[in-house]
Length: 73
Image (cartoon, rainbow, N blue to C red):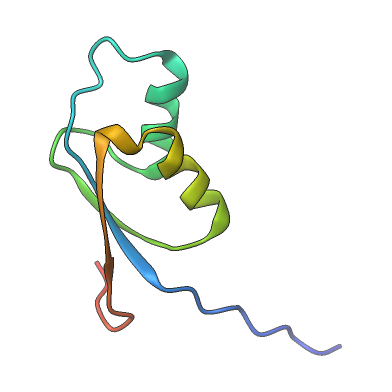
């Protein structure tokens, strides 16, 4: 059986810039799902459709920028 090659997605850096205090449970769960915990916490994720959908839901709380494929954390 042949092994499928994993698709390479560009990386994006996501930073939480607003507080979770007073946010709905759904918004808090989305932030947690992205792997963010506190204000100014940063994660690097692949630019996949499911991640972009999560970002769109809480874009007012985040700062997002693309990074080169050679950088990772």
